[in-house]
Image (cartoon, rainbow, N blue to C red):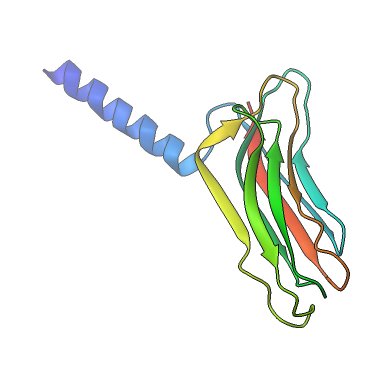
Length: 142
């Protein structure tokens, strides 16, 4: 009975330690950002030899353009294929706040399709009149 309690205590401690660390043992954390104005903006977890890229989340935000258009934030290189998240712009000009950002966190995190494959998140081209677009990704290599 004492042995079982010791094992359970050790398991509980190790789970707590991993949850506090935020990454699995041996993981190499990475973040990346890109910004622009009217064109598509991409940020990636670049391919790394002998490592699998894993994305834990991304953030995309942009200003309005002079003409409304619908676009998508796309995430490529992940298991299961390309993921798309809608992002419309309003024809109100850059001085008016746009729709809310696309802010996604994945639990569990999503791995790349294979070892040595990059994961790329691309925000849509916002069009003429847009003044800022930002894409940020975070994850790790395993």
